[in-house]
Image (cartoon, rainbow, N blue to C red; front, side, top):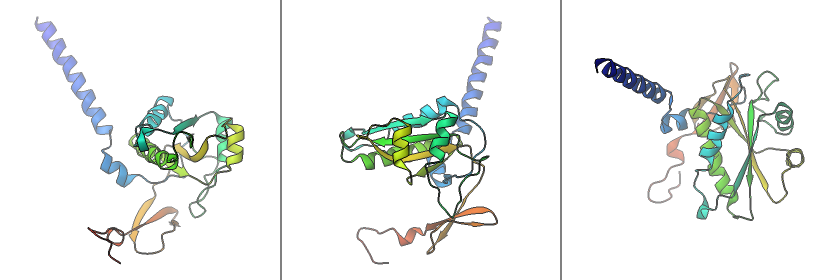
Length: 215
């Protein structure tokens, strides 16, 4: 009886310790929102497929007009196909294009179906934001890319023309730490001492209470 009791206590302690450890690793939503940055320089460290699937799963839980969910996703992890994506997306000039040692380790091609819903662009955008935050919750950096050679992506990934390529999400463990700068002007990102600075508008310049008031 004592032996069983000690075993039970040990087992319970392991469970509690495990849950505490997992809880410490999970980022709360406010921290995720406020610390997430677009990443364009990644570590050469692969992302587990199960995590990529979880990220997409979180994307599918986004709000959708009429709950029509007019989205589909292609997870790209194979080396040759990753190269195809990399050669057909365009990066923010002021941030720079990743060199060969710092390229994304995976991509998610986000497709919208206008035959299901004419609101597909909004629904897919909500799904994308979910995935960016989900990725960051795992410590994975991301970049939402809309500047794409769509013709090449359609051809190389066998995407039917009935679907629209909304965006491509680049993913990887970050190898840079961009900083935000709250400011009133000059919102183009720039580099200072080899660190990317991302200007953000001051809250009181964009928020109105009860009615629109000219700033």
